[in-house]
Length: 100
Ligand code: FES
Image (cartoon, rainbow, N blue to C red; front, top):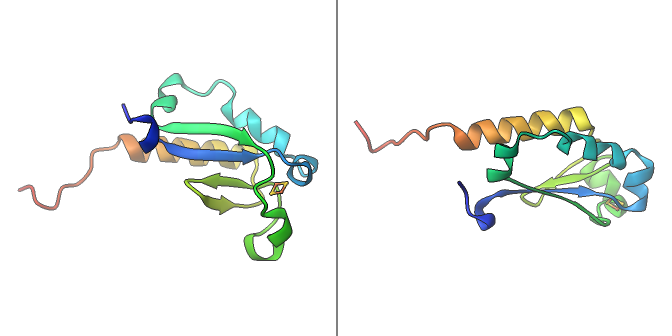
C-alpha cells in the first residue's frame, strides 16, 4: 500500500465554469470505484483550478489534474480509463535494470 503522500493525486475541478461544462458528471468516475484503487489514488473534487482563464493554453473545460498536470475536455469515461491505467501501472512489477 502506498503512503498518503505517494498516492497519485487526482483533482476534479468543480468551479462554476467547469461545472457548467459537465464537471459534475466527472464525479461518476469515482462511483463504484474498486476499494483497492484507494491504495493508489487520492481523488478529490476541488474549487476552480484557475485553468479556465488560460483556456487557449490548456484546452477546454472541464479540467482535472493528475499530480498537478492539467487534463482538459475531460469526461467521466476518459477519467475512469485514466484511473484504471494509473492503478494498473502502479501495481505492475517494476523492471529492475540492475537485476539479472
Ligand atoms: S472553473 Fe474549472 S478551472 Fe476554473
